[in-house]
Image (tube, rainbow, N blue to C red):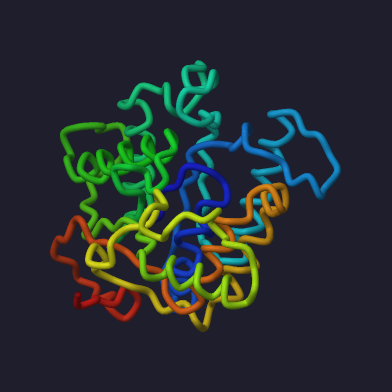
Length: 274
């Protein structure tokens, strides 16, 4: 189970993992917390979409991306996108950022107890990028992983289930540096606006990586899934998509919870020795 904030996040950081799981016969579930209604719209489309219209478009794009990745179950929680830090939408009644934590945790607990995943993947405490919705997704996912194992709480959410491993996605500094260097070597402008790899807020030191997933055989699935997010792909927001697609060999992860498990999945999430 992967717990993400917005439509497209599932493909950016975990598209390869989801496709690898599918190819290995491992069932997957994508939980997307918000509808992305306040994101930009690709200007190449030549359309203006209201927040409600964009939310509908995102939902369809997410379904198409999940199909490309052979996801078994897709759950869209439907909270409103909260916008960036300090925006007027942060405190809106339906914004994900403003929801009572217990109510969202209860929903994730129910999904965990229903799907019964051995592995859950979500963002690190900074939300990888610092976006409020990513931070909120981290909070509710981590709390739900722990709460789902406690049968005396959220009793209406089903029988207790203990998740064996919790991972955070990692974009290693070395991978970003390679992406920048390759772009410059091909005579392209600096893809990150001149920022050094270690200065980009979603890169992390290489020694934080504990596991990696070989995505070479499923790279096309990840690329095709990202391309389904047509309202997002465009000249206004190329960096994160391009950076995600530049990693053709591996996706990287950090193990943060490790409990006994009857299934050995190191063939998918390969341990990395620093």
